[in-house]
Structure formats: C-alpha cells, structure tokens
Length: 185
Image (cartoon, rainbow, N blue to C red; front, side, top):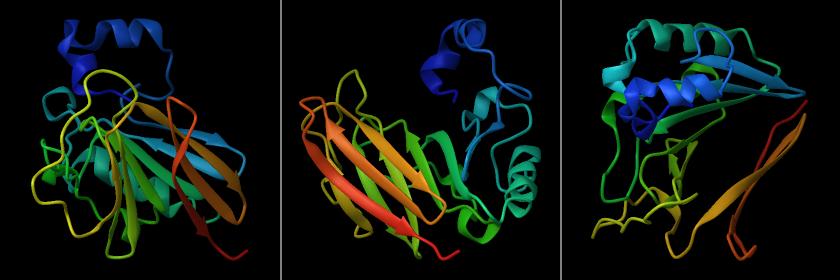
C-alpha cells in the first residue's frame, strides 16, 4: 500500500515501477482463502479519487465490503485513523469500517505499534518495521489496549474461516502482543 514516503519520491514512480498491482494500483483487493485484504491509498495529495468518507475510493470500499459477507475483511492503508503516536491520528481516514463490513484495520505512518479498540472495532498501527521509532504522546488514548515502541518488529497473521490471530514479534523474535478475533460459521 502506498505511503507518504513512497509518494514523496518521484511521485511514487519507484513504488509503481517495482510492484505490479491489481486494479488502478492505488486501491485494490487481494484475496487468499477466507480473507480479503482491501488495500487503500490514504495519501490525500496523491489520491485523485479522494480519501474522505464520501470519496469515490470510500464508496468503492463500502460496495466491495458489502459484497464480501463470508470472508474476513481486513482494510490496510498508511495513515492511521487513531494513534497515540506523536503524529496522532488522521481524521480523514475515520471511515465507518465496521458498519461497512470490515473486521479490522492495519495501518502505519506513526513509527510505533498499537492495538486500539474503538466502539468494538480493532485498529492496528504497525509502523516499527524500520527507520526511527517514534515516541508516544504524553497522554495515551484511553482506547489503546496495547502500545510498544521499544524495538522494531513485524506482525504475523494466522487466518482460518472462523479465527484471526494477530501476533506482533519484535526483531529479537520475542512475542510482544497477541490478539484473537473469532466469528461463528
């Protein structure tokens, strides 16, 4: 998924030259077994179809999620809608994901790791894959269930038709956070 660092370099040309992506290459779906990954472009200055709730891109997501009731629907994009990281959240990406049929969002931008629960919906911020790690704000969001910025790391996601398991490991391969979602059927 595109991020501001990608678009800052020659308007994203290296990113698009390297990757061959489906659809318009800015927002698209990747499907594997019982999961669909809805990749969005949250970079406001680099998305001609818009990044707000009533944008062409948002309406595309709403319609695609409505057509995917039997899969796990993960929405991934760069700018976290909510975060306790010093850059804060990106209000333009506070779409009604849960109401549209998504199960979780996974984002970055803030170079921290967070698991946030807002109105019964889980948002992950995972920006500690490399580069400088960021500090957290002096006041952590009360909805933040877990925060971490002590080391770089990565998420592992295990998927079955009825379960999603998210695990965050630091670069020393230590399990830092684990979160399971289940659904019937």
